[in-house]
Amino acid sequence: MATKSLLARKKLMAKAEEQLKFLSNGIFKDELPTFKDQLEKINDFPLKPKSLEILQLNLGYMCNQVCEHCHVDAGPDRKEIMTKETMQQCLKVIKTTKAHTLDLTGGAPEMNPNFRWFVEEASKLGVKDFIVRSNLTIIRANKKYHDLPEFFKKHNVHVVSSMPHWTKGKTDKQRGSGVFDKSIRALQDLNAIGYGLPDSHLQLDLVYNPSGAFLPSNQEAMEQDFKKALKDDFGIEFNNLFTITNLPISRYLDYLIASDNYEDYMYKLVDAYNPAAVKNVMCRNTLSISWDGWLYDCDFNQMLEMKVESPVQHIRDYNEELLQNRSICVSQHCYGCTAGAGSSCQGSVV
Image (tube, rainbow, N blue to C red):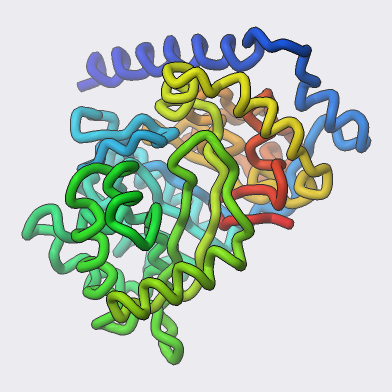
């Protein structure tokens, strides 16, 4: 098991190093300013954390989908899974952290064999906001997942679900044949037990990523379009829509290069850079923990193997005071979080 984990880690590191080098040294018609240059212009380099609010745990890269834009490069063939031992180390941190939100992601976090045990144990610790990022189709993937809505409700889980579009064609194009129909049924299942309804405390939010090489539209306008279409066509209700800019890393970077869109997309990100977004980028209030316990400023840095710049780099050695004094690691992909209205796992930041 240890050998397999080591091999998986080495493969990830090799790909991350290659992609980071490409991001830093890509060939452009005109030289792009570095993200560090932009921060220096507003006297915000090195970028420093604010108060820690969110612990984001990646429970593994295994997923029942293979989405073309996935920055985690997740899929059914991925074997990287957070062990129970690492989960127990995370629980020790949750007991003492000043963070008020626990955010579970993947892959499909529900596919981790210890997912339910961890949710139950973490729930006992009284986390204020307990998020699970679900791709929706996992609820319909197998009978053993059919009761997930009830499980979420029992533990007052805040469900954040991926939904590329309110139409079948655009959704299936990005996420695979049949994804739209399964997602609609899953949303109806969640609505049926109270999720996303106006008078319910059960929170259901959707996440939108553009399917091509362009930036998301205005978040508020898109939310209204989504709400109207899903309500009119399927009777579905939800609370909020979060728009997230695709960052040029992992599978999405591969797509940009293969489609000859990489150079144009990077120019779009740089041209749309908004210094006002720097104030609320998620790396300033979030700490990302990988499936094997390493610490990162965000899950995008996690995919590029850019560990935190701190004497503490693993969950087993966790020290919040030392981590709060670190400088945040930045590179060219950070333009994605500061383009336009900005982008984070909680949507626009401006």
